[in-house]
Length: 326
Image (cartoon, rainbow, N blue to C red; front, side, top):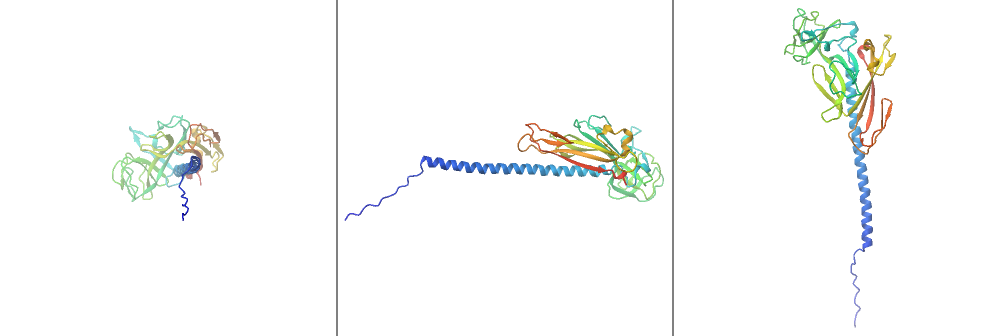
């Protein structure tokens, strides 16, 4: 008996149409994955840039607030009620960089102004501010000075260095002088002090600081701090602009009567009446994302150019001068 032969099914593979459909579906899925990855990466970059921008802003505003607030600091009351003597000499003449009178403890400038110690590369259109104060570190006298020409013996950990400008005060009188020796606990000065100070006096480092905007070595606009007679320090990169307004107490009642929109609006006689500084800083991110990012600064809307890929954000703070307000 002859049995029927089984039918053998052979694998015939994919047709061209099935292959093309599979490739199309795969391409769509791959495109979706790529789109999600690209969007996630861009979102991460933007978030990271904003986080860095805000961190820089917090640091910059903290430094400016701390130092502007302490303008005129001597560990005592208002400079208006103290006699301050400048004994720092340059070429045998009194060096005005270390004058410490009430109308000089804070002074603002525009980049177009001319003033002593002006940074050479300050960015056009920006503002700058100078402040004078004693540092936070103090050293107490260990005893009464034998006479006004003798060395000032102190105790403390301020690490005063030869050549630094120091301030000694007993809250009635203050003298500014240059340290001329290397001993940490004995501060020899380069000229007669106004008097021999007693054990109730303290010694501070004297700081004449300038804050301004200029380009760093990478060509990025940055906030800088300069110690007159000392170093220049880059504080924060990617700071494009600084605008300063000033609150003026015109009648001596320790409250703001006028807001001056620029340093040019503050006559020389009115710097002693400034009790508040409004600081506006414009920060930018590194280039990220798509182009054309408009922003708002100092009350003005700015339309960025198509080639500009920087995010920008304005940060504002108001700083009261502790040594001019109760």
